[in-house]
Amino acid sequence: MKFLLDHNLPPVWAKGLNAFSANQFDGKSFTQVVALRDKFHHGTADVEWLKALGDEGGWAVVSADFFRSKGNAEREMIRRQGLNVFVLNKAWHKSHTFWPRTAQLLLWWPEIVRQANSVQASAFEVPWKTSSKFIGLKL
Image (cartoon, rainbow, N blue to C red; front, side, top):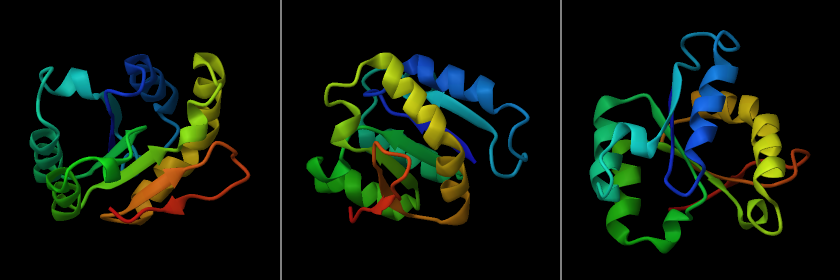
């Protein structure tokens, strides 16, 4: 599984997660993490990069953007392309600075990788507290 971090997350997270994950998961469950800006040109429309990920296959998206607030075209493209999407809920940005958010993502990361490999075409809200469970989202 490959993971793309959306523009609304620090690009350095992709590099860090990619490095931290090396040799920690089997090759089928994890291959790489990239930032959106490192895979697609700036300004690429959401529907274009979502389609490209789906066409390539084996991608999951991590975002802080509730795709529900986007247009129908983006939500439909996620469904049609069979992508897994993990959305960090609002608590991730509410009075939390870079370092606590980074630490929390590292705590969640093994579960995000596991979940991404166990489902297809699903959307989940990732709560702040690691004692919580993913919340299924309807896009």
